[in-house]
Every structure is written in structure tokens, then in C-alpha cells.
Amino acid sequence: QVQLQESGPGLVKPSGTLSLTCAVSGGSISSSNWWSWVRQPPGKGLEWIGEIYHSGSTNYNPSLKSRVTISVDKSKNQFSLKLSSVTAADTAVYYCARKRAVAGSRSNYYMDVWGKGTTVTVSS
Amino acid sequence: DIQMTQSPSSLSASVGDRVTITCRASQSISSYLNWYQQKPGKAPKLLIYAASSLQSGVPSRFSGSGSGTDFTLTISSLQPEDFATYYCQQSYSTLGTFGQGTKLEIK
Image (cartoon, helix red, strand yellow):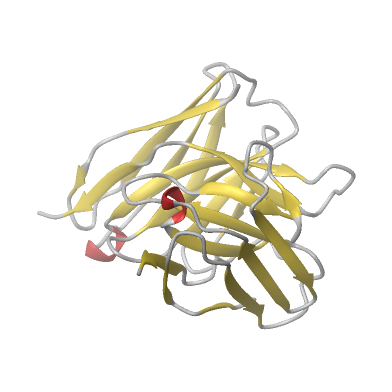
């Protein structure tokens, strides 16, 4: 079964760039799924950041779009998140997730596989 | 953006109770609604997709209903392992917004 594992620095300085990678195992990143990033600030709810398809097509949360880049590396079966100009408000647990379509639908999706999450703190 | 509002924000219940959590969308989202369960320190877990379809491996005491703007998640008989936070999420728009969460606590 597909498993996801996030990795990256746990501490990022203010105004710096947060960089995380999600390794996909047990399946191919080139399958017909979108690959997403979701974050959760301490004690708060879930926020969708963005997603990528293996073709390189991306969608981003408009509130973060100017600072977010999601990329895919098919040779390594992984995808990555970069968030620039970070502030303390970007401190959160960051999750990667697989987003797949409901059978028979081309527009109804759900996130069925999640990584364990990685904590990123923005602090000097 | 589509706003998702859950009620209540928190709920106290006992083992064996029947519990219902409500999620309301700011516009019609057809059946494009998912439910997740999250326990402290863990990733969210998909329970229900497309408003009423039970994810494989999820106990049948969980059920979902609704369409349009109003949705419910029902747990027919609470078990100790069900005490967690529950989130709804719409998938009607690319920006898949989540509800603010409902924390289910032991009474």
C-alpha cells in the first residue's frame, strides 16, 4: 500500500524558505492522483496549501500562492514544497497527502493516504 | 472561497452514545464532502468521502449523509477510540477548505 514520508528542516529562520520533501513508497507518483500539502498550526485546524499532478500541473491556495512552489521528481518518486518569506505564522505541522478521485468522477476527490507529518518552526 | 462551518465546536459524550456532527457549506457543494478523524499527534484519517461513502476499513458505526449545503457525520455507538477531533472538507472547489473541527470528548 502507498505510504508517504515527509522530510526537511524542523527549524527555519524568519524571511527564509521552508523546504520539504514527501517520499512516495509502495506506488508510483505517476499514478492518476494529485499529491497535496496540508498544514496545521499548533492547536488549530487544517489548511490546504496546494497540490501537483505528475505532469507538473499545480494548484495553490490563493492565500499562499505568491510564496508557494510545489514540484515533482518522478525519478525519485517524490514531490516537494517550498514556501518563501516565512514568518512565525507559518509554524505548523506539514502533511503530505494523496488526493484521489471518487470512482467514476473526474471532479470529486478525497485525501486517503497521509504522511505522519513534520513539524516546522519559524524562529531566529 | 467556500466556507465550511461545523457544529458544535466541541461535544462531550459517553461510550455507547449516538453522536451527530453537522457541517454546513456557504454554497451548494453537491455531495463533494469528506470527513476526517484526527487524534492528537496523528495525521488525519479519512472516514467518509462523497458525503456518504464509507472508506475501506472504517467501522460501520460511522455514517455520513447530506447534499447541497448541509451534511452530517453520525457515530451510532461511541467507542473509546472514537474520542478525537473531526473535520469536514469540501472538494467542490480546488481550494478544498476544511471546517474548523469538532472535538469529541469523553463525558
